[in-house]
Amino acid sequence: MGSLRLHLWSITGTVVAFVASLWINQVVFTDTSFVRGINWIFLPSGVRLLSTLLVGSDGFVGLLVGGLLMDFFYWFPHDPVRAIAGAILGSLAPYLVYRLALERYDLKASLTNLTPKRLLVLAVAYSVANPLLHHIWFALQGNTQNIGESFVMMFVGDLTGALIMLYTMKGVLAFLPAQPGRARMTDGMFRVRLALDSAYNNQLR
Image (cartoon, rainbow, N blue to C red):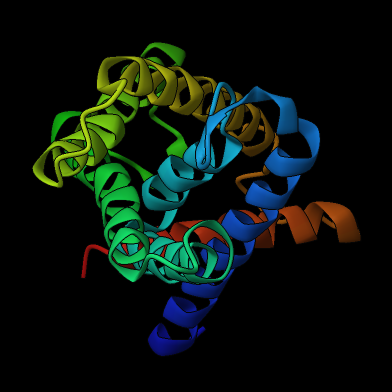
């Protein structure tokens, strides 16, 4: 697969996954909302972290595009400044954690060398970084009402969402074969693994 096509697939897949997770979250966890955009369980946070861990900078771009679309057309259609800031901060936090994993854990494709403990560390790191960046921006905008409660709520929502998605995906990836098989399903699963490996390795060129 060509480099440009691979980038486009990685970005598009991230956008689709992010929007789908947001829709699922709104349907399943609609009663867990603290304020608009902050939930006790927030599955899109898991998609944010996963997409950057799996496809690096392409994940960042996909999250930024998906964040801008959702912020402008769903969350904050009448507040463009809040929409742009939210999309940037929501994409930057998982990317910073991805860089941390790259340096600290020598991150490998398909999360193969991320132990459950390392996944927990990355989930906590993201769950601190995301609300921290957002609430620094809130404070700079003069919006400090219930800021402590809001921070804790976002931290919990990001952590639960990230843990659910990370451990689910880690379990799924563990079943992807390292070699192609004769059966169509096995061969298809191998191709998924190969695509993830190629998408990840492409970030390091």
